[in-house]
Length: 102
Image 1 (tube, rainbow, N blue to C red):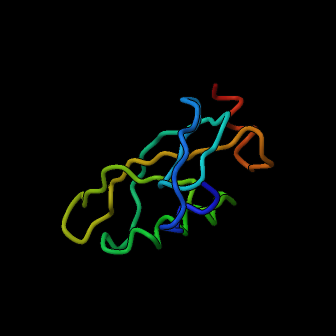
Image 2 (tube, rainbow, N blue to C red; image 1 turned 90 degrees about the horizontal axis):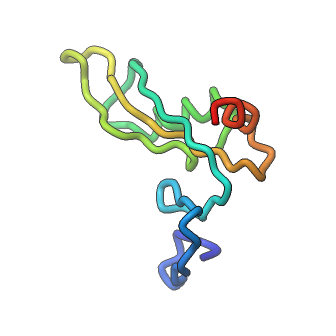
Image 3 (cartoon, rainbow, N blue to C red; image 1 turned 30 degrees about the vertical axis):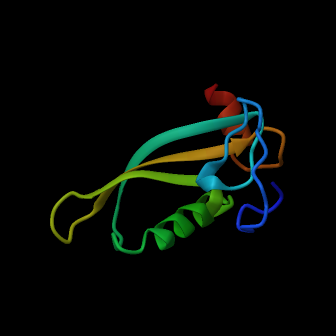
């Protein structure tokens, strides 16, 4: 599939090694960094949190997938889990870090 946002496109079966973060284009030879963090932010605007995290890391926001998000206390910081996908075949800034972790 060339454009996952085009409803006229059909998804073709990828090899099991492919991963599609956020239902986007498939990535092959990927490494995944999993973690959690506590951050100040609006729980109703997770796109802004993803955009900020992506800008800080110098990666495309579509490569970040948020897991569970919970307020630690009312109007307090958010605790969230996340996954960051790095395509080892690209010139991704996380490429070196992912290789070191695997």
